[in-house]
Length: 422
Image (spheres, rainbow, N blue to C red):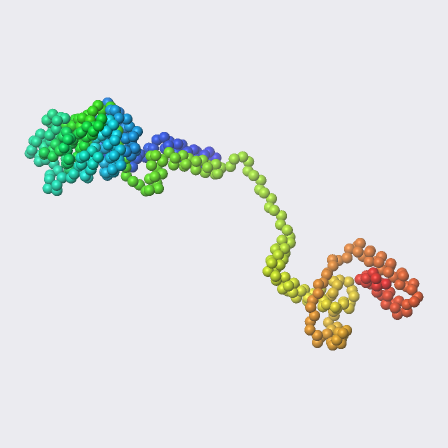
């Protein structure tokens, strides 16, 4: 016998899983391998941990940067857009420019794979290098000849890029590679902005080489005191299926999980019995003549009642319970009134009006016949009393002839004779 508590444990386990998912979405967000979650060569996990261990408050944001800028403060907050795989759009750049103008700090590093990035609101852009331009400096050239920066003393610094900064007039160049500006900063309003042509310096592969980690953190400190750093992850999110992606979006996911909890509770409530089982209901009693009533209504609505009656009379005529109109039962016996005459009677008798034998006439229409039930004791007693009551005054009349008395006595003695026959 199956234990009753096994299905209940399954229901409650599913309910507990949904409750946990509301508070902690352990599958994680669908992100690209080049974000701060990535542990590969192009990921930024080491730079995120480096900033966190150096005492800054780090946070990952999955909200649109334009919306996030309105929620962040303006003092000692740095917003990092490192290696965005797509351009945020004009609206986002407008919101970020207003945020920087009122005191925010912004770090933007173009992607190494797609270095094209237009920051028109800030007056600068990242353009790809020519096809014949080498991506890396030759190994025989000294590092100080390849990379020039005022943030880190001469040291071992490796650099990879596929783009360069344009329109740097009025900007302070923080890093140059082979004479091409690669990082530049500028004060806009009350805030600061730093633009880097490549996100290679902040990748996991770069931070384990030479003094790259020192240079990466030095670029971050050039924006001012680093107390709180927010890394944007919304631009790295990979789009899934439209319906499923929207239902499990971070902003709509709590509502979706709460709806699933309600569905689960409703399914649990409908799958088990509360209280004693109900007694089976008695089937409704059906009328014995329900079929006849339905058939009669059908013939009445279709106007085919005459055909039905004609078929019934044709069926019962051979049994002798239907007689022709105007015909009396010559037997005069008991039974159904209007019984069929004996065979041969139609040939011996003629019609009272036309005088023609009945066998030559057309068949007259049928008439309704009543077939009474077998007589009861009360009926037999009543007919016997009626016969005695009818026969007594018929014999006392002397004005009638003997033939009339004999016929009257025969008529009164018959149980089927009417009361006025005497």
